[in-house]
Length: 259
Ligand code: BJW
Image (tube, rainbow, N blue to C red; front, side, top):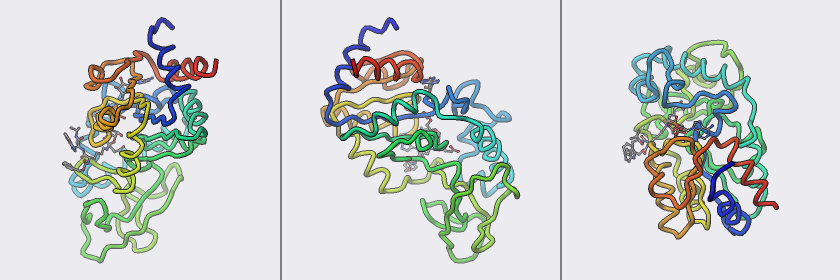
């Protein structure tokens, strides 16, 4: 692979006591999970910003759940790819943390340790009457239920699904636009960003607060690296750009860092 800084980054990986990798949808692209933005990311002409918010859910929970049902069905047949496998291997090492924006849980299926999921999971649901994350209620006057559960059934037997405890509408336990992330996840991600080597892989670096982590890493003195076939807003900020797909660059780095 003709990337002049590949060996330099591999050397940093070999030596960095604290290594953090932030991942986005691009890391799962080779598994067949569609990314959010770009040609492939569209679903029935809707942008994620139009569906992934509480107002859209209140207005039309069936439409929003159809989008999630479609994504659950696609993702259920996807397997972790070699990029997930490399990160799972690195995560066994002391001082390595993985922070992901992905909701597909492919990092978990690959066996990643010390994983922070910033945006939740496609496979977790919670009662929509709960006020958590500032989401408010979805058409209910009942007291907040707060029940959350894992549901991996594909297809879901009922759309929209309901809370098994109180019968109210269920929602994906995913952080929508305008909602706050779980405090403990933000804390863990911010702590992980204060490292020696910070790699951002497969993310458009558009969505905050995740997009701010690379800046946090720089402030903390980390060497920063981006892996992405396309330029992003952080390409001009990082120390090294490895322009290419994660499923090629990460195995190459893994090999070089072990040689
Ligand atoms: C490859 C590849 C290959 C392809 N290998 N690479 C500060 C400034 C401006 C705005 C804000 C701000 N702080 C907060 C906001 C508002 C908002 C926000 O960031 N808006 C921006 C769009 C401007 N943020 C929020 O609302 C967040 N909440 C929050 O901060 O609360 C406090 C607050 C609220 C309100 C105002 C201010 C503060 C919550 C964000 C939740 C994001 N949730 C989503 C959707 C979840 C729904 C779902 O999944 O069903 O999470 S958005 C969507 O984008 C999803 C993703 O995790 C996230 C990031 O996307 P990602 O992973 O980067 O994917 P893509 O598709 O964008 O990019 C793929 C990349 O891969 C591309 O670059 C390709 O080139 C590359 N690629 N193949 C490597 N093989």
